[in-house]
Amino acid sequence: QVQLAESGGGLVQPGGSLRLSCTMPEQTWRTYSTGWFRQAPGKEREFVAGIARGGITTYYAQSVKGRFTISRDDAKTTVFLQMNSLKPEDTAVYYCALSPRFAQDREKEYDFWGHGTQVTVSS
Image (cartoon, rainbow, N blue to C red; front, side, top):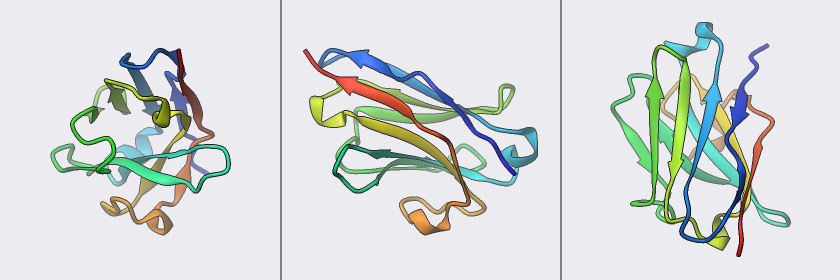
C-alpha cells in the first residue's frame, strides 16, 4: 500500500562517502517517521538512524554516530542518509522504513519497508 524508493548505494573505498535517498508518497510524509536499517549477509537486521516526522529529532546507532547524518527534504518528500568515513563493516543492504511514531530502533513498530539498496565498502 505504501511504496518506498531507495537509491544511492554503490561501491566505495574505506573512508569514502555515500548518500542514500528514500522517497515516499506524499500521503505518508506528514504522518510517518523514518528509520534506516541495514542487514549484512548472515547477520540480523540492525537499526542505523531515525528521524521524527518534524525533522528535528534524530537517533543514531552507536556504531555510526558521528559518521552518518539523517535528514529530510520536505519539497522532495525524501529522507537522506549521508554516510561519511565509511568502513568495511558498514557493508550491507540498507533499508528505509516508516513508523507512525518515532520508533527509533524498535523495528517491530515500523509498518512499511523499502526493497533496499546495496552499500559495499571495500578496497
